[in-house]
Image (tube, rainbow, N blue to C red; front, top):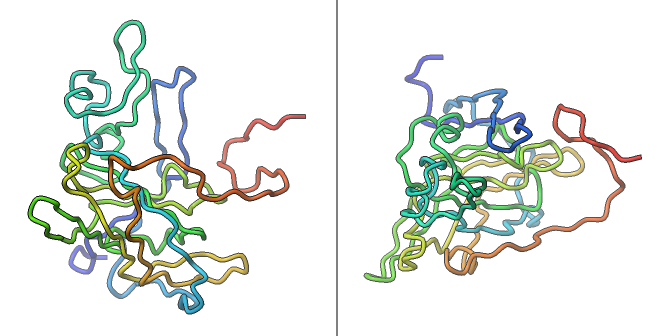
Length: 247
């Protein structure tokens, strides 16, 4: 397929994450990079006429801390990124995302980006996922204006196992974080994004909107339980390596 027919949409299906025992090395193993063209747009089985698919949350949870040197304490502090260091002053844990990981997922992007996960009540059909699926309204309190942006990259990782897939991680520039004067107020699905239901149908989520969610304001964003289901224990849908199973 020639570059002329390719849209500027790239979707990464991250098949698994392998962590070293000391948690300092993260190896991302990718299974496929999918390029979509205008003629190849996937068709969902049906439209979301009865509001079967719902847009359940949007959280502006990481600001200015994606695509940076996540092992540099000085940079983490300058950017206001959360981290924990060991007794030697080395970064042990951080919510920041390193430039190396971002390159694997998204290619070359600007540094100091934001992260906003958006969640739905059904799993996303990864073959239909694109950054062009989303449009975000950003409100500026200073001049009381709204501008619209699209994410620079979207991925289903790290919740990318077959029994997950309900959350899309959006990467881009969505506000000024702790400055608390610029932040998202609305996220809309603006193109054909399919969701898989229990009976195998795929429902088109185009037109789904999440707005007036307090978690879109970085200073108000919090962790909470979105869905909780009681189900029989099973390892079906887990990653390709064998999970630990108790006796």
